[in-house]
Amino acid sequence: MLVLGFALWKLKLFGAGDAKLLAVVAVFLGLRSVPVVLLATLVAGGVLALVSLSLLSLRLRFQATAVPTPNSAPASAGTGFSAYRLPYAFAITVGSLAVVGMNYKDCWLH
Image 1: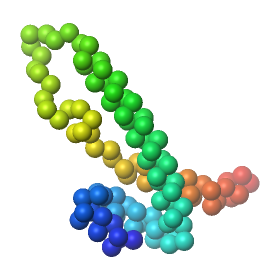
Image 2 (image 1 turned 90 degrees about the vertical axis):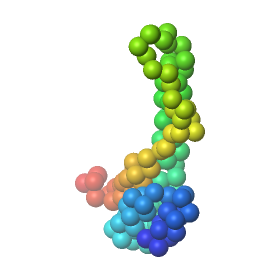
Image 3 (image 1 turned 30 degrees about the horizontal axis):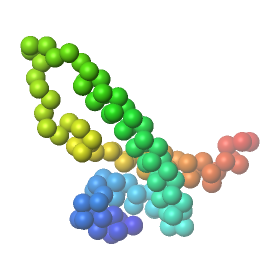
């Protein structure tokens, strides 16, 4: 898992911290759980992306309607959607905890 994560990092598709976090999750939960963790991470990441983009859109809309003051600096380039990076460690954590919750739900109910 770490080798796959390193390859994705070299291709600039993945962060190095994300690769290491997924490797630890794979060791902790076992290799058989990795596809389920990746699916749950994908869903959590999609929800995180939608929420983040919605909040960013509101912020940009608010900034566009704000009245500039003489002391306010102009918006710099790269403050829009294209410059936004999504921290995926949160989605990996939520996806991993969802799988742990599914695997051990009977233990928690007693």
